[in-house]
Image (cartoon, rainbow, N blue to C red; front, side, top):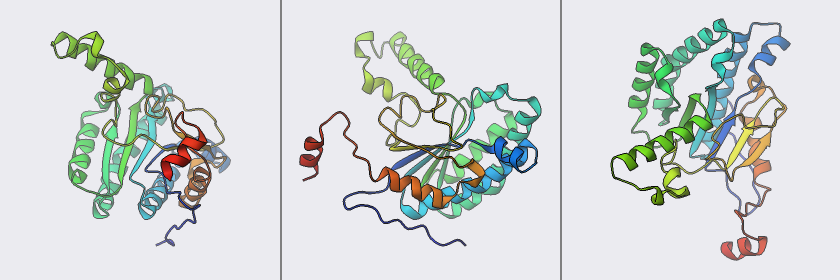
Length: 253
């Protein structure tokens, strides 16, 4: 068991309630170590374990991991097949551990494209951990931010057809209630690894006011200590949400 992660944050600052992570660099890590691409993804699972542990130790409420985007189907077929097998294996091996530590697992995205057996594993994992009250871990799989907004728009349109809404009802609050994770606080901090500085169609709606932290570490080299460094950076920032610094100070007085 590794040493428990502890941080010394500035007075008045707290850890983010919700952290979102774009886990990038598995393939580059594999190439760097002279291994096949799937070896990088397997190594990345170890980083997931470490980061989940760190979030639980620090009292983070929600962790959302971008595991497989809707664009990732364009990767080589053998790599995609291997990723699906790794996903299924991780569900088999990791969910009981999450449940033991009172962690809830949720999978967001268009799950209809996954095999029937994988969909059943996802349903079983979500059901097993549904009543857990600790950290919520969301895995975004076959997810895209544009898809998310489109499916919310379809829900609203269907509501209009059914007589529940009219176009005049539509506002940001209503549409926001129809996107994924609408029942959770929005991400306070988004971390992306491997030196890339873009959000790649991840939680476009939800991260309108998120802080961003870009790490040069490849995902398999990112652990809970690197997570701590990202949170330390986050804690130095002033989040104004359109207000002035003076207004923020007055609100916190």
